Image (cartoon, rainbow, N blue to C red):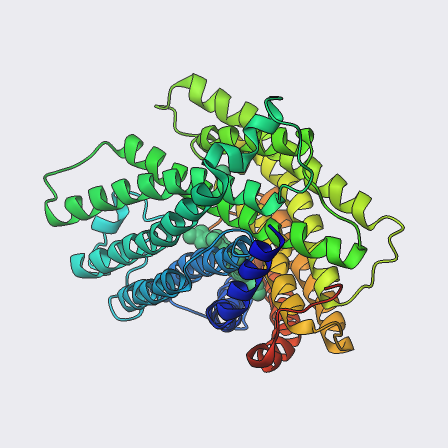
Amino acid sequence: MATQQADYATLATESMPVVKLYLAIGLIVFAGLMSVGVVMRAAQGASLISLGPDLFYQLMTLHGAGMVGTTGLAALAVNWYFLSRYVRLNPRIFLATLILSLLAVAMIVGAIVIGRFAAAWTFLYPLPANSLGQWSTGAALFFVGGLLVLGVAFLLVYLDMGLAIVRRYGSIARALGLPMLFGREPVDPAHPPTVVVSAVVLIVNVLGIAVGAVVLVMTMLHLVYPALAPDALLMKNLIFFFGHVFVNATIYSGVIAVYEILPLYARRPWGVSRLFLAAWLAVTLMVLAVYPHHLLMDFALPAWMAVMGQVMSYASGIPVLAVTVFGGLLLIYRSGIRWDAASSLLVLGLFGWAAGIVPAVIDGMIRVNLVMHNTLWVPGHFHFYLVLGVLPMVLGFASYLCSNGEQGRTGRLGVSVFAVGGILLSLSFLVSGALSVPRRFAVHDEAWQWLADLGALSGGLVLIGTLMIALPILVRLPRAQLTGAGT
Ligand code: HEM
Ligand SMILES: [Cu+2]
């Protein structure tokens, strides 16, 4: 067993160039898309920048699709890297996924920049086909096709990950730890949390992407044969099932960085327990059933689905969050942990994820949604757990890979700038939302503009913080070894 482990470690070292490529591209794209975000928020403000509405919606589509896709790929790199320590993954397939993804990016960016596609990353049916002359059917097909290629890229690497898990653990159910959870096998504290979470990600995201592929193909068919008009409510259900599951699977993949790296800093193991396994099983089931919280205002939706959406919103985040946050706090409590950029980022990620869930759950209540739906409250909660939750987990991972046991003060100062900027940015959205400022408006009423300007400045801070964290990483990345703090 020990030599097998060592073999996997060697393999992980050999596949480092691909992991590094994912991270380097991710960091650069994050910074670019943040600048787009700053420009959008400034355009909603008093006078800093003005954009025509057509350009605003193109940028909003670019920022939304780009951020969700890039975070997905960067979190995949975290997941793949750590999983490759336990099972035999194929680096060539991982590289093929990256190449396919870059093709997808070219299609998506082309559709937006050349084809002027601007129907948002949610491509809500039948908007892609109703451009009012703003973009052509071809541009819509390229955008939707690009998302489809991205989905195929993910499914490809997931297939390899799934097969590798089954080869080593016998089945996905055993990787999830179900025999241990239900008492058929003794609990093995050495069973890696990474394997449990990877199994969860595979189950939910293969389903999510498959549903996404179905709705994307239906959208394409509708674009080509407009007479073939699917049911709009069905399409919305499929789209938000896909979107919700994809974003959550991205967060779970990012959490693997916390499970793997924090124990090295705290010099304590993070073993699995029955509670841990139960929490992840619960989330596997609930994350699939909670998506109707995106359709609470769709009166044609059966009432039981809206109620399920609300109840599941309370229940679905809590088990895993509780296990992870309490587990993390217990791990670092009196451990004499060393606070460098990587460890601070990972703990910031835990905070951002946990705190960001609160406004999300509030918005998941039907009575509240009646007022908050389509206000900036919504970008408020998701920027909270994306900017302050999953992004720091990815950055923390990249920083850990490059740290070789030491990290300069630039990194740490960058983390503070990033955190302050991220909190202010999220607050600028949340406060706007609480004041009923609508989301996805290119031009803002005068009374709302100071919040947009504050948001743009805060976004600038996030960007500066990101660069302060990312530039030292990018410089060190080519030479980075597997070794990090504590190993
Ligand atoms: C400097 C940091 C950022 C700034 C200034 C920023 C700014 C913005 C703005 C102004 C909007 C449009 C809000 C509206 O009026 O509806 C937006 C939307 C969005 N942002 Fe960001 N953002 C930043 C970072 C991020 C990050 C890191 C992610 C994801 C990892 C992200 C994901 C999204 C998504 C998914 C949307 C929704 C687009 C849509 O409504 O279709 N943003 N952002
Ligand atoms: Cu959701």
